[in-house]
Image 1: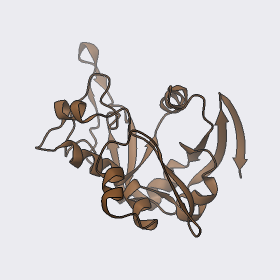
Image 2 (image 1 turned 30 degrees about the vertical axis):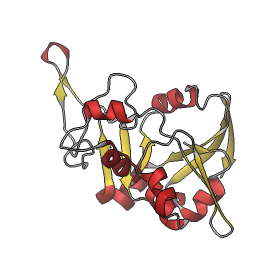
Image 3 (image 1 turned 90 degrees about the vertical axis):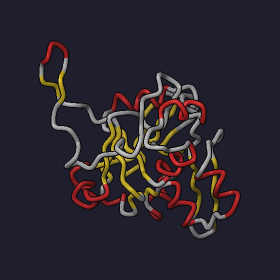
Length: 205
């Protein structure tokens, strides 16, 4: 899910991580630190005559206080912001996407939705793909413990867990991320839609 109108720049530049976008747009110093290493209360828009427009989402669902309660391995909030900002994020189910589209912060704003061929994404970026069992970017609702082992390789992801009454239950992947981003995302995209107040309109191909 990207901000409205960003498909042209995503086609051109790729689906980059926050850190990748800051590199591309030449953002440095205190401005970069505020975007990359701290909580962003608002979205940040970047504009460049060559690279076009990009929008970096806010991370309102996280707070320093919430992270302080759930971070492990000696990590501090600044570390977690930097860890997340080096990745591009994908929902693996439509249900998760729908929840985000209905969230108060986004429900009234049009959004760009990229549907990706997972097989192609893995073929091109398997070594950089990581999986998570949780929404790693929120701490508002019962903050779950997180740390250096939260993002797992495909090979390191658990095959199964124990469900109710001791039955076997495969863990659910909540997030799929690609370290550093996906510069060739156009080669993996099946379709792109514009969504506004629940109405889906195809814009590509």
